[in-house]
Image (cartoon, rainbow, N blue to C red):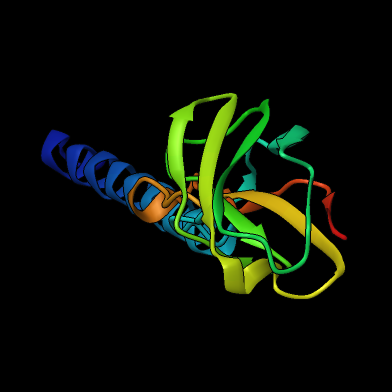
Length: 145
């Protein structure tokens, strides 16, 4: 007499469980072997501002202070004007115009001053990054005679 029907069912059941267990083990191994993690994206370059004109573009050494207007393009709302590399209190007018106060002390001595505009870095969105780096314009020269 051969195996009963219940014995054949048990063999099929064991075989199906073995296949399921093997599939789950393979999927788990592939997931771990592929190094699945939440990766952050490094910041990419933001918008670079450009200076077209300084107004005025020169002053006389020892003169009184004044307000300088910086005309250009791609100025962010929190852009900062730098006077020889030092950030100044900047007023945003439009995306193409900024102003800064120039004190008499800043133009006390003759020389050339580099004026740049920096758009600030922006933060990313959560664990995936996505922010931008700070971007600074090429310098425009201001002359103190």
